[in-house]
Length: 279
Image (cartoon, rainbow, N blue to C red):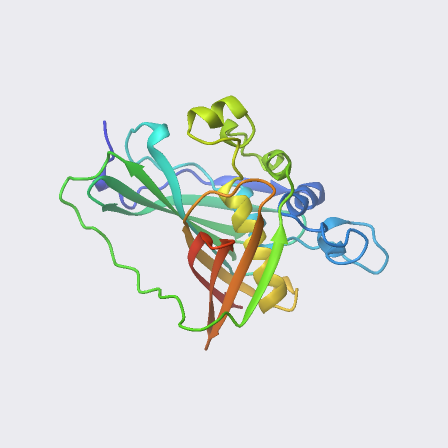
């Protein structure tokens, strides 16, 4: 059957989530930590045994740490699915290793005409039942709209009419996707030249969540003084793919109790409508 608009509120089964020190180190390397200064800057994220340096997890690591069972919302062609939106909210600082329990639900399904927008929400609690993080994603599924449903709220995000208050740039490695895929996403679009060619790309593209992780590192260092304890939430929309080896420029604007951000490669926007809050 196609997308089921009545699936809103459906929940998946709870599932245990476990991550190790090694998992956190691998994720940090996968989103570029340590590239600029392997023996100094970001040692707390890239090593677990440096003198006077306790290991920490990057806040955006939560996107690869599990989500509980996937709730049912219909049947569709997976080739029609596009990961269009991603947001995270941290209720506690995520430790470098630990255990938690996650559960997912269908938060909303909107009719975009030629596509459906399915919004999924995952809630993760620590082993004492206290909220640890919430992850939200938006999936655009082409060919699944047009049933006359709610189109959803319009975005009120607007690019500030001034230069960014700060810009942090990170270069990705030519083999960045091969490294990032070890965190669990083995989609051949990011590794197999033949598969990427069939999808219309000259070569495998970078994972969108890798771009998200690079962007999160810039926000952490630029807006939190590199302290994960101060990282509250970030979210936005994937705009265009990134090729491994390209340089990401994260533009940030301070707007009262939040910051707006946009990630670009040159003049091309790759992550848009970004909103960040401190915790």
